[in-house]
Image (cartoon, rainbow, N blue to C red; front, side):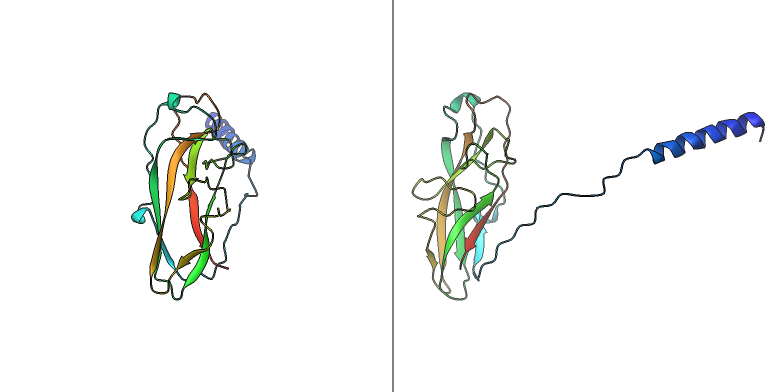
Length: 177
């Protein structure tokens, strides 16, 4: 190998080595650990086993006030069955809500369009809080109970910007003490 090739090879390895030496490592990760402890033996099925609740398409001009359900809500059926014994518990929703509008479930707290989940009386659900209608739900032993929520879109600001495609992951929990 001639001197010119040695110099070029050395320069190349030095450049590559310098790039790996300057790479930044992230030595930590942020996690949130969550859980629920319940003595329920029931099996829960939501939305007939479909993991997505499609609430439709709305024009941004349909939203007339922040924090209110807009459009026609869709049904979200929760079925509890196969309980080992009669149980009495609370249905609660666990998910992210907007910081200004705690009844609007969103993908992250800063989102401007999300979803309102109403109990059978029309009361809006809040994160990890049962309403008077979702408290004390009795499921008979070896029987079943179906509870129906209503779900619709809501904005957290007005007017609503065009082009939103909101999603909001939630957990529905039958909590038996």
